[in-house]
Length: 340
Length: 283
Ligand SMILES: [Zn+2]
Image (cartoon, rainbow over all chains, first blue to last red; front, side, top):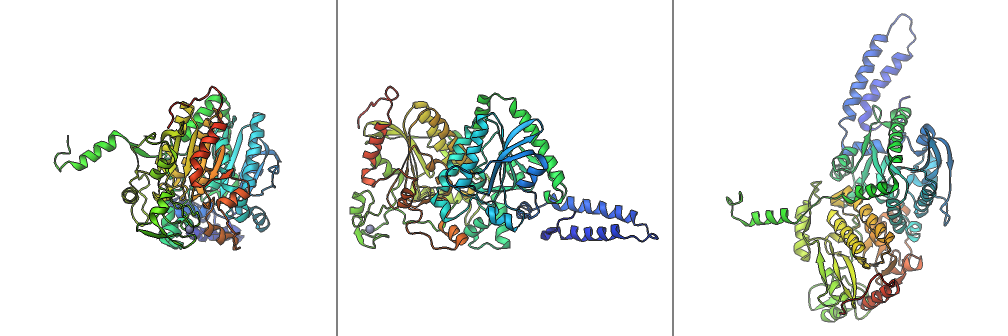
């Protein structure tokens, strides 16, 4: 079924889809539309391909935030079996913005953890659009430790605009809890797979984002700050233009992150984005998860932890020592003598 | 992230007389400096630049600076109001520092330590690739040398926006190094100074075995403006201050700047394990 919510740049496809629907619904026995239907289908595919292979950074953010985009609970239902939710952080409460539980995937038993943003108003009120509190991060870590104790790999599905910016969150140590997760996940003795399925909003995303595989769905984004926040700082005001500029500057798309050497894989989305076909998206994701589980389960834990350490250890772009000294020297020399 | 609302007064301003932003008294600059940039009237802790901090905390001439030739690049070709490389140059000229972090080893009352300092004066003390790399190397050296680690955070800028995702990942990198240091039994004391926010608070500054803070420092995850825009409630008194964090259980001690050196020495002694480390030089 075609999505209900249309993004601005999806309008041309929406028009074609409407024509197609009319033709397909037509029951006039004297008219054979099959040829035309075939033609429009082809056109539609080409059009979608053209639009979605050239999305701007800001358009990508909009796709990542599409209200009909599959979320944690969709993937849980479409990919996993026997999901057994485990609630609570044993200290304060049960944050509904982060879900956790045992689940089965093929032959693997796993600990499935992820942000859930809410698919309807009731869910969204409950889980605050996927913005977790400290107790959510504490819950996630508790369940990861449980998984490690019994040798289960951990799968983290990341989808949050950011950790919740509130009074209670600060009172209960939002920063400290996220920091603790970064530290403990880096040495958790079991495989961890992290996939950004929608929004990778800064520390709130990274708080369940340290692992052996870091991948993103094709139209997900991952950023140190929201485009709105960045626009506010850079241009004093977040409007449609400045948000788009900020999104571009932040290099937040899956392609950008792959180029910066941060991702293992970009997981392809169905034509027109994940919201167009939940089932196909879930199947793609499942294929990658199974591959990762197989690969990681073969690696001895000590090697796994060493590789995880090195994976993050090498991230960063800077220069050091001689190269820099040489250039400074070159700058000081008068022109014409730089070829030495 | 950059917290535009979080701009405390930068250091003791130039001029013979200065005005304290807290008590509003006009004070003699020399007098404040003699008191380690603390207001003689109300004990307000002005910013203390990294070099001054080293002078104040470490035994005389004991500091050996490490990794001084790391420089930021501009992998994203980021431009805010001015291009990032240009901004870096300005910050260097303004502070005399090459980056927001200074790391190395030295002695605190004769006790050898590895020390890291992030300086708010340099791009709000924010963490990009170089700050992340320097802190990580410092932690790794502390692990290798089996020395106590002290990090004094003045990172109001959190993760540096100009290096975007690379900055975010520095949080994971330095936290992973701290995990290894912790597994090896190292002592990590972090000292939170005004301000410590966002990605810094949510990584190295949030992970001390012992967490100290200077009085009245602003410490937190989200910026006050962001919080206010979200909840639209009046924020509690002293919200995100050292005192607020102490009351809510996230800080071990609030320590006046004049006592910091003595306190660090005492804490190091309490955590010393026989046979692991010996005092060598007295300073
Ligand atoms: Zn004062």
